[in-house]
Image 1 (tube, rainbow, N blue to C red):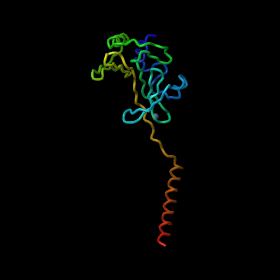
Image 2 (cartoon, rainbow, N blue to C red):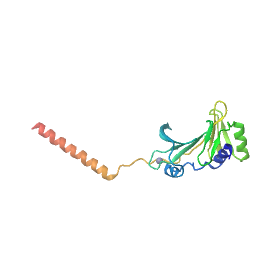
Image 3 (cartoon, helix red, strand yellow):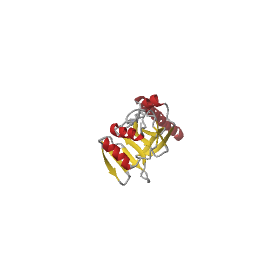
Image 4 (tube, rainbow, N blue to C red):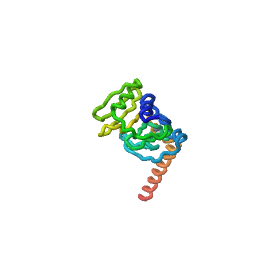
Length: 180
Ligand SMILES: [Zn+2]
C-alpha cells in the first residue's frame, strides 16, 4: 500500500497498524516485540518516555499503565517503515499531494501557516511539513488520561508515624540524660 494511502487511513481512523492512542505498552509489546530504543524527553512541562518502533515514535504516560498518549510517524527519512503495514519508501510528499488525497477521502482540515502543518478533523491527526515543504511528520496526540497520583499505603503511613514517634521519644530521653 502506498505511504499516502496509509497516512490518509490514519487521518480517517486515528489508528495506524497496531498503533493507537490509549493502548498500553504491554499490548503493543505483545504485537511488536520491544522497541528499538526508549528515551526520556521533556514534554508538556514533564518528562515522557518515547519509544521507537522503526519510523514510528510512541509517547507513553508515566504511571504503571504506560498508556500511549501520542504517535508520530517520521516521514522525513529516506526510508519510512511502519511496522505491520510493510516497508514503504518516502515519496517526499508535498502539501498539495496530501490535501488532494484528504479531499478525495472526504476529510476536512485546518491549516496552520505558523507551524507549516495541517490538522484533520475530527481525529486531530496532524501533518507537518519541513522547510522544503516536504511532509516531515504525521502524528496524533490524545491527552484524556491523567496518571493517578501515587498513594502511600496505610501500613507505610503507620510505620512512618511510629518511627517519628520513636525518634521523638529517643530525642526526649537523650535531652533528659544530657541535662542529668
Ligand atoms: Zn498514566
